[in-house]
Image 1 (tube, helix red, strand yellow):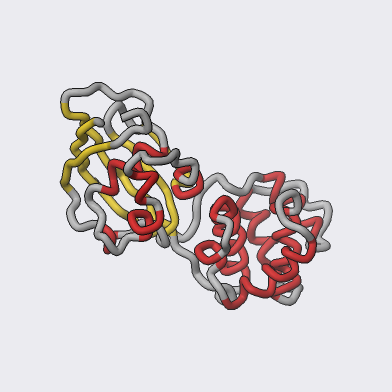
Image 2 (spheres, rainbow, N blue to C red):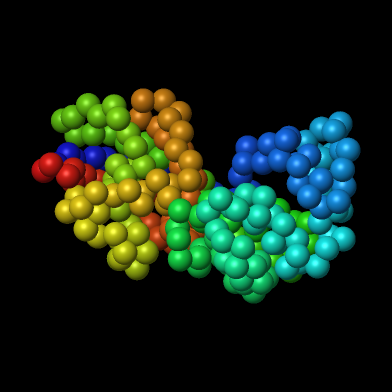
Length: 221
């Protein structure tokens, strides 16, 4: 078991994540929405064209096309149809049962939300900057599970991660779900890190303090 001091530098609510959609994605989606030959232009120009192309379709039809494009290898045709209807009413990036799909669903949902200027729920994510200092240890292999275990020391008991993953946080079992909760992990320097996750898992209200310390349990403790 290690002891760690955690400083939360910033928690920012965001509604989109840079880098998820590629230029090729935009071109292929334009083709899927019956707008072929859009080979030139900046990413922003292609995205603006895509918004126009999407709104020529009913929202559930557009959602189905988007889901097929990104998730046809993970969902059946029936699941895609059902999910396309559910997306209009429900924030599937939070509510869908398989958390491994939440990151993709967030990005699909937000593109549709912007295209229709509403209609689909406005999902939220949290970008968190934090500093970790290990007391009496040098820790170099920082992964998603360790970050969540460290952060859990400053979270309210109402937080979903603490409520749903207590055995994982205490290292009674492995924590593979951490990679589906933390969508993005970036090292800024040796002690400072940035993570992106769903507002569903972590937001400002979840933290009882922004400066705290506590144990990090490892599976072989």
